[in-house]
Amino acid sequence: MYYNEEIETMDRESLRRLQSERLVHIVRYTYENVEFYRKRMDEAGVKPEDIRSIDDISKLPFMQKQDLRDYYPFGTFAAPMKDIVRFHASSGTTGKPIVAGYTQHDLDCWSEGVARCLTAYGATKEDIIQVSYGYGLFTGGLGAHDGASRIGASVLPTSSGNTSKQIMLMKDLGSTVLCCTPSYALFLAESIENDPDTSPSDIKLRFGAFGAEPWTENMRKELENKLGIKAYDIYGLTEVSGPGVGGECECQDGTHLWEDMFFPEIIDPVTLQPVKPGEQGELVFTTLTKEGMPVIRYRTRDLTHLIYDKCRCGRTMVRMARIMGRSDDMLIIRGVNVFPSQIESVILEIPEFTGQYFVTVDRVNNVDTFQVDVELRPEYYGDAMGKMLRLKDRLVGRLVSVLGIRPEIRIVEPNSIARSQGKAKHVLDKRIMNP
Amino acid sequence: MIIKQLSIFLNNEIGRFTEVTRILAEAGVNLQAFTLSEVSDFGILRLITDNNEKAIAILQENSYAVSTTDVVYIELPDRPGTLAKSIQKISDAGISVEYMYAFSQGNTASVVIRTDDVRQCNDVISK
Ligand SMILES: [Zn+2]
Image (cartoon, rainbow over all chains, first blue to last red; front, side, top):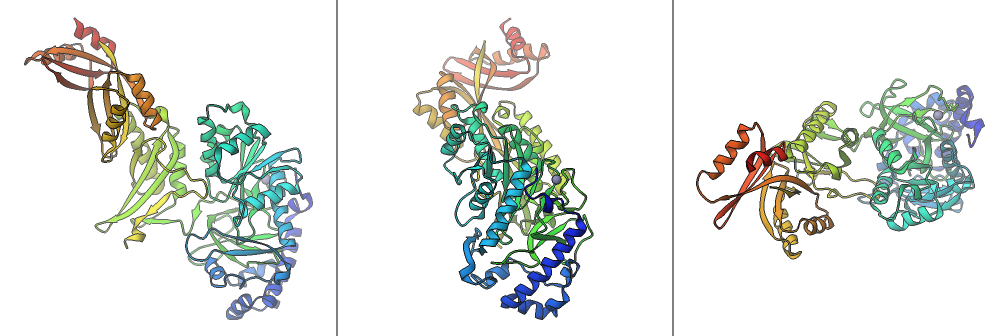
């Protein structure tokens, strides 16, 4: 099922023409309205008239999160305040957040993106959609909410937290769709398992739309098994729009990006040159329709690759492979690049472990230490020490072959690794605190 | 005879062991014997108690991973050589011992033995 069949299945030549038209417009619009873009383009020696088609995009300068911070709060806004109807802000852990402003047209494009995703998963107006993303400045809650409203579904805006109430409402109202972060979904699934008053048949969920943090194929299997659902990726970021920049289809074989609105490129994060089609690198977005706070060649720091082959679902929109890390989450340990997502996917391959993990990196006598705490499923804790040590060896062996570096594994007591309710926090790099 | 032993998984951190003994003492469970074996990251505390059911309930309530294991329990007169004789019987029968621990109770010594085949071990020793 398509929400917007004409666009979602448009032939690539027509799509390129549409993208070209829109790029020419957005470049002129930002050049004329925003000092930041004018200055950047002038510095790069590019004029709006140099941009004639989407192929010219590589002439334009990049921008990144720091630019949005430097021009906080309104420096990259292109529309006058009278046309801005909503703000959102990213969860900055330090300093000023990133503030995004949306016009009504921006909100309409955003909700259309989410509506396309929900429809691709199979949602209709018959569904009860439980939105367990946080509501407020975070784009997750209201973003999913508006998309669910747009397809006419019944929205249950539980927001995040208060897990027992979430489960009660999920049962009593018979929610059929769950929207939240994958780590919170896992937390909910475990809470349901441990809840003596809830049996799996009380849960009516058909599928979940999970996003706002990277997750793995194994996590998908775990969520699908535990909740008895199909688990789909929904992708987005506040700087570009919010959730619904793209989403998976029923094929679960890559996340379609709605490239009529959000044009993706992949660049080499070091040389900043576009990579060959299909190669991995950093994802860069240009918003083709945004009015409030457009971005042009915005570096997401997400590492992935793009698949341009037509999907079995009939959509022509490009697919993004799973995000395998963030260029700035990357840990360099003893000179080796390590992504927490790699560690996670290895742990989830071995069913005796819960998939919860915590990485501690430190430096002792000028040597990096690399420790990973893991938990066993309750039934694998026992009297036989040898059995547990063999499991540990198996995990170490797999990690060494995937990461190319040997971590110190610690099996810890059950439920002793903190479950995250929002963006999962899995790493403590003590080298940053004691340089 | 064959009895049930409790095995508790503990993070290898100062205070975890004391914490368990405190929880059990507060619940009125008496420890008849215990042994702690550790590797670098974790330990297994093995306990013989006078009330396993209560011990399991209170430990699980405190989120400990606790399991039960069958072990062979023997009481021997506290005299040199008696333990050696029993061990000889076990090894003659070709049974391999995973671990054992002993404790003294006045005039007798008690020994807990865990083997791959607990039933066979118990038969051999009782002969
Ligand atoms: Zn598809």
